Image (cartoon, rainbow, N blue to C red; front, side, top):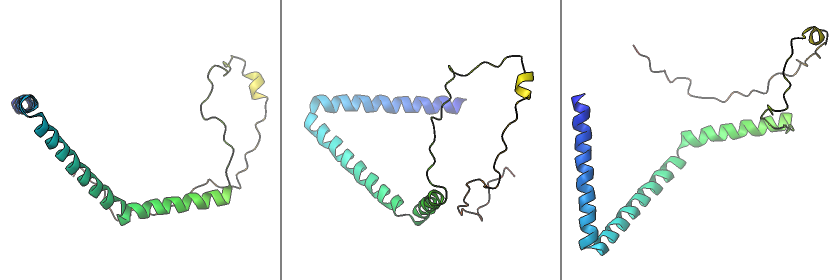
Length: 135
């Protein structure tokens, strides 16, 4: 508990000094402040672009996406695009169930065509990776 108070107090003091320094620099040397902020923005942009370039060319990430795209293309080829209605249920139009179950029990439900299996494709993953356990 005391460590949390010390840490938050330290962070508050650092932020206070940063605010005072920013105000001092803004009043005494606004051109220097602008050039300093521009330099920080350029360096941060370069680091961001390098990071994006490195992660984009990663073999594991792009390989996983390639396998997924291949699976989707194969699925579309086999099953075609199905016309899907709106996914949300319109609750206003939904009928309220009544206590008369006898009329519903007399209706025969149509049989489902079970000859077609579910549209599933296995995408290879990290099979050798062990899960982190508590032990």
